Image (cartoon, rainbow, N blue to C red):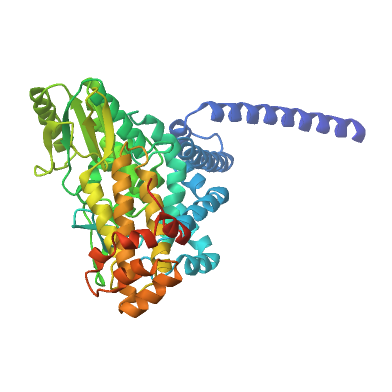
Amino acid sequence: MSERTTVMNWSKKSAEAIVAARRRAEREGELEDMSLENARHQKPERSGRSGRRRGEAESATGRDEAESARRDREGSGWDVLLRQALARENLVLAWKRVKTNRGSAGVDGLSIDDTADYLKTQWPQIRADLLAGRYRPQPVRRVQIPKSNGGMRELGIPTVTDRLIQQALLQVLQPRIDPTFSEYSYGFRPGRRAHDAVLQAQRYVQAGYRVVVDVDLEKFFDRVNHDVLMHRLSKRIKDKAVLRLIRRYLQAGVMHNGVVMERYEGTPQGGPLSPLLANVLLDEVDRELERRGHRFVRYADDCVVYVRSQKAGERVLRGLRKTYARLHLQVNDAKTAVSGAFGRKFLGFSFRLTLKGKVQCMVAESAIKAYKRRIRQITRRNCGRSLSEVAEELRRYMPGWKAYFRVAQSQRTFGRLDGWLRHRLRALQRKHWKRGPTAYRALIAMGAIPRYAANVAGHGGRWWHKSRYDLNQIMPIAYFDSLGVPRLL
């Protein structure tokens, strides 16, 4: 009897367990199908058990929503680009570029070597602040450098740490943004140089477009509207963390004479990101010119459009004024002109037409004047330096100038500049000797004929006049070659 009762009780419990399991499965299926709103209003059969299940469902749903939001942020590019920029491999390349570019310290006074020591301990916190959106760039240090026309150009020098972060961003953003630019934009773009822009302009002039619309912007880098720029940039990248960081760089203050001033417009020259941001803003000008079918070349904020007539050029200039006005940029009326292409300067070059109808690229007169001004500074006769020391400084300056203007067909000009430089060096050496006996002994030691040596040493003063003729024979071109004085030709 007890055995039968035990079996019956066991069977009854098993049946109840099966029914309960079936009901739980049905309820779980219903909860899986119901939306969150329906689940909140569903009446439970038993208050205790049902209340526990609703809590579990809400907790699971909350976790799912958080996970979904995280995936959405990552999928929509919320901070993917920023994480790529802060990756170790990218930062190593950025640091190498910052070291190669050298540059002075920012407002914190830390040089590149000092910053390297600083980042060894502080970088983990800086990286965490960048990813969390807490990082605030430091103000840039304002400096002024002389321009070739005698004016002054203002630069904003970020700290080395901020230059590193900007360079890391540039290495990630440029491969994505640069391919979207116009093929007639040449400034500060990988694989493109000023030479390419000049040669393209030369081809336009050779094709018969002999009138140029030369547009100069009034303090372009100081007049960039932040809202306009960020609107154009947000169309190209969707990473909100990067956009937020770039806006903070734009709004970072400027320190001048120890006083920090807020900045409401402009992108300071001196930061690695500035050229890319300039191209983002001015690409709208390129697209408008392409849409109208014009032949143009743009290098940073220098834009030239080549047309066939003066009337067409004036019409193009009116359209460009409207386009720049939409970008909140101002045209410099004093330097903007519609004129003949010959003799007009572009990136330090000018064009001339030969008798055979061929357009040649020349060094512009303003560039030659700037070169002579710099050579006069290096070879001034009151510098108190030896000829070897002067030659060393010339080796630091002249090769770069020669490399930039190598595409110019100005061999005769280069030859005249070489002769003028040697004349200055002879005059410098003659003044160093000062007294006639000293000059005579030095000239004889150099192998000069006594009559020539006496003629050169016989008159004090008139250094420029006495450095010609006889001194040319004593100090020929080979003498300056032995000193390592560079030549343009």
